[in-house]
Image 1: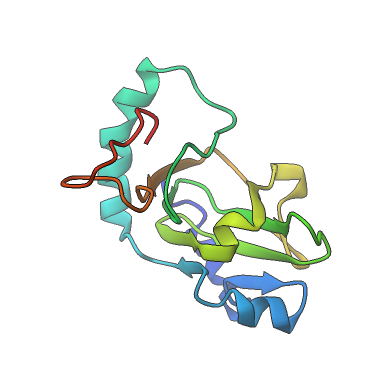
Image 2 (image 1 turned 90 degrees about the vertical axis):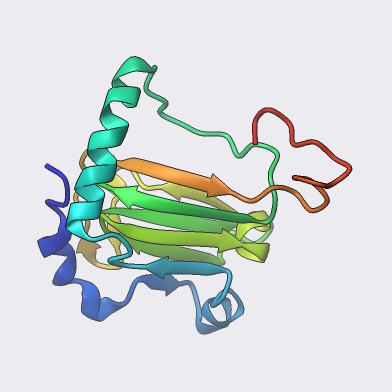
Length: 163
C-alpha cells in the first residue's frame, strides 16, 4: 500500500534524515547529499505510482541499476516503502553516510557524494538507520540525472542513448 511507511518514519524524524561516520563527513557533504522528506504529498505519490504501475508491469523488473554516462547530479523520488541509502567513500570506507528515505521523499546526490562515494539501498535484513529498524517493502525510485557538461540542446555534444 503506497505510503504505508509514513507513520513509522515519523517516529524516527527526531533522529534527522542523514547520519554520518563523523561530523567532518557530514559537514563536507552537507550540500552534496540532500534529503527532502515530504517532497510529494500522499495524493501526489499515489497519482505517480498509479501512472507508473502499467509501465512497470510491462517491463522486466530490474534488481540493480547502473549509473549511465551522465552529469554531476542525480535526483530521485522514493516511493512506496521507507528505505535506507548508504554511501561509502570508495577510497576511505570508514567514511560513510546513511540517508533515511521515506515514501514521497526527494534525495539529491552531487559533486563528491556522487563521484567519490558508492551508493546502495540496504536490503530489508540490513535496513537500519542507526539503531532503528526500517522495514523494507516494495520500492519504486524515479531517478533524474543531469547531462554531462557541454551536452544538451544547442551544445556541440549529443547525449548518448543511455542518458
